[in-house]
Image (cartoon, rainbow over all chains, first blue to last red; front, side, top):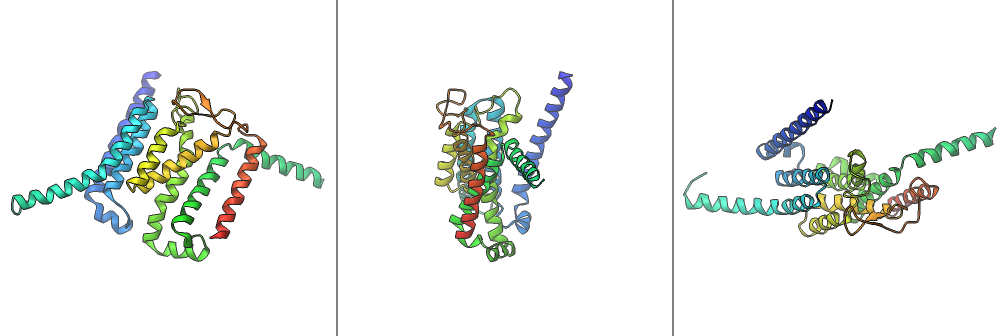
Length: 100
Length: 174
């Protein structure tokens, strides 16, 4: 009985992770398509909110407040990382002349 | 006969409020969402304003995370009731992460995080009025609070009605 319930839990957890990963990939690659229906949509904000709520969930399930703090920290960091990457990508394209 | 009916109606009404302990938190979430909308976009809280918002996609989508964040935040800390093994009012009722989240959301312009954490803080503030209190120093430590009302007591129903009145007043003001 306990083996079955642990298997069910594992299946639910794995499918939830896969769904979240697919949604993040869709948010990043189909951002303009989503923006047609939801103009305020931002893939960066979506990704950061996924990490925030996922982190909170992990912190509660594992009973470790440190994971919650870490989730808040990474959530704040993601928009800055995005800005840095965008800037770096432009610099890379200029440096390699036409690399896209 | 009329007295009996009145008594029955009163008992059904009070049971509805007494058994639904989340009523207060739901109303408080709505109140917070309404106050935030009143502060950020005062023109919205009118019939014409709502029509304008519904017609304007951009305003509607900008206000949706605000309302959703406040409402879900006001109910989120009670998620511990659904997790077996985790005691009620322990980790999820510890205000420190939500305080950090609120300040960070304000400083780094993450509006959804600001509103969500503000809703959670409001939930904890309201819970601190109950006899059980909330943990302040550590998530699994001693509970503290104002401790003035019992969960499910008549005073809680009065508080819910008062909050409803405040909501109505804000609606009228803006």
